[in-house]
Length: 412
Ligand SMILES: Cc1ncc(COP(=O)(O)O)c(C=O)c1O
Image (cartoon, rainbow, N blue to C red; front, side, top):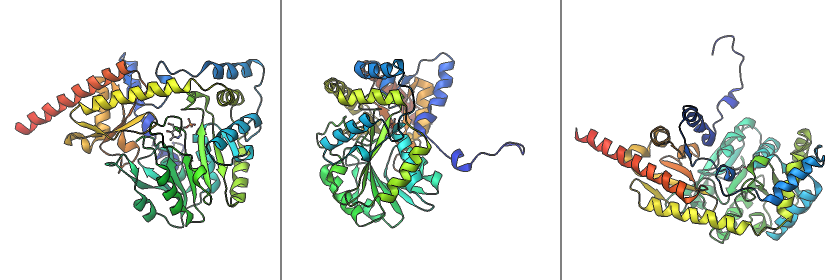
């Protein structure tokens, strides 16, 4: 930086988002005419065969055409808040439309929650590894994120003792991402209850339950966290991006479950912030409303397809030397362990070399947790089986080539 450069805020310059950071070198390769096989981004629309359902697209397009293009109320269109609350009541907690606040995606909801609650020195306790914004955003408000351990040798289940040992008066949020990105683990109802019991002892602490993948649960034991809590305040997060296959619409929401009526001041802070940023996209809210109120029979076949692709990945990884995986219970990610010593401490190099040599794009595990994600890569299994097979053929070839190279180096 020269002396005359206009200064940026250091808090912004230190932000990282691994999932998109690796897209930069991929775009350079594409600009040189290479086709990149992308298994990196959790966007169902990036892969053929899983389009946003027609009735949702029609509702969005009709809203635009019919001139419903004005601002909506700041907390969301009333009919949409009603529909979300009804859906959450089905999941087991007594949501009313007043408890639901519609945002520009769960990512905006997180920014509002952190802005509304966190003070200097506060702590967010998030699963390690986790979706990167849970690390990036709290630091904007002088807070920081600490990780509790997910067990890499036991399906990435929550290490309750580790979580409990990290609780103190500064912890304002315990985050449950369920199913988790990047590991795909789904907490059992007993684990959820155990987390709530731990948080119960800390009156200034709430639970964030990010349930954006809840419709992609292959274990059958997924539960809404709010539905299990009769004391701890729970902020549920969900939206249109993953289970309704429309991430580009940028609609998500947070819901406040306040069983002991302790969130009056938090609610006021959040509502003030929401009003100050006007509203989420009005026509996109209409599209989501159609998804919630219309026929949902399309969801079964979509989930079946994702499940088949999941199985193909598990079968392929089983047959490849240099990779291991804990089978994910939900979402559409696998967090694959690299077992060749050359890559264990070097997952980012693995991703970059694989990209340049074989034109396959994954995300380095350390981008989801420097400590607990190290030696892993995240793979998205939304592509169809032929594309996945091609990806695995190339990964296998790459691993073999590097293994024989390092053997030659050791021998010489
Ligand atoms: C756990 C989790 N939460 C939230 C999001 C983003 O949600 P939205 O598209 O609603 O901002 C993602 C996207 O990958 C995610 O994995």
